[in-house]
Image (cartoon, rainbow, N blue to C red):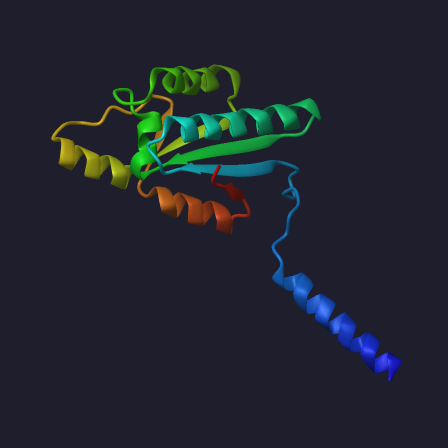
Length: 152
């Protein structure tokens, strides 16, 4: 009976362990983080930027690499708009381009199209931002590629 019990416990542990996501560095040793912002809230925008800066400094401080993507869609796209981003947020985003080249900003093309249609004008996006067709698809694909996704 004890042998059968141990075998069942081992089978359960193996089954549970294979169902859990891996929480480790990629094989190339680079940590990868995606932060999403979908709210037009300056406090949340600053929170996302704080997380990106803190994570970047942490890994830099211990001599490890990290790639960080910030995906902005829906109301969060205002983080990357030159005409509506709060001044302190805009200055901080621009500072990332100079001091943290490991941080990339992705703007949702679908959200841009919707805003342009509703506002009747071209939406100006920060030059450092890359436009992707769909912000949520960028999140899905990053998740499938093993990136950690966080919504601060």
